[in-house]
Figure 1 (cartoon, helix red, strand yellow):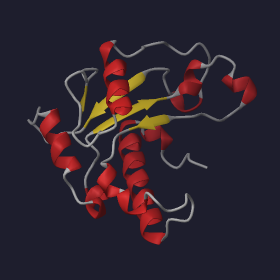
Figure 2 (tube, rainbow, N blue to C red):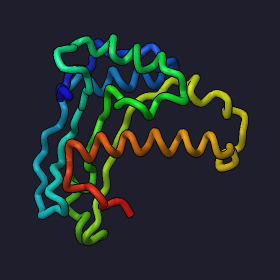
Figure 3 (cartoon, helix red, strand yellow):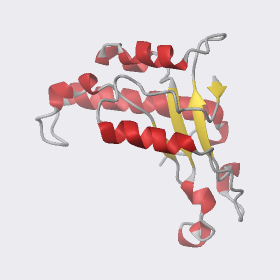
Figure 4 (cartoon, helix red, strand yellow):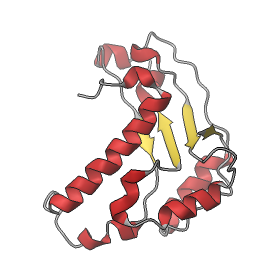
Length: 160
């Protein structure tokens, strides 16, 4: 795993919606915020943004790894790590969070996906897309969470 704030050159081919590509580039133009939390925070989380890249040892070709991942069949997406995650803990930045939600915390985890993995269900109603869709979505989420926990082991078994 490689951690870096450089994302400007990364524009995965599977991100086809201009708004998403534009957002990724805007977010990458300035370095991540390294604000320190101003209060005691559960699980020792920091109020920072983390750009996390997963590559094979010695492989620095983030674009190539991303293209390879996007080319996978949708049924195989949970068999290997997602090559890019953005992880943040917004509640660690909010000085009033502990007052409003004592003993709780929040995480934001953003990544990309190839629309082709999900297009079979694009015309189905939300919450009525069937078992295959729900299983794929659950496995994808579990992979992303496992990657997050590998970086922040104190979060293991903390999801309600």
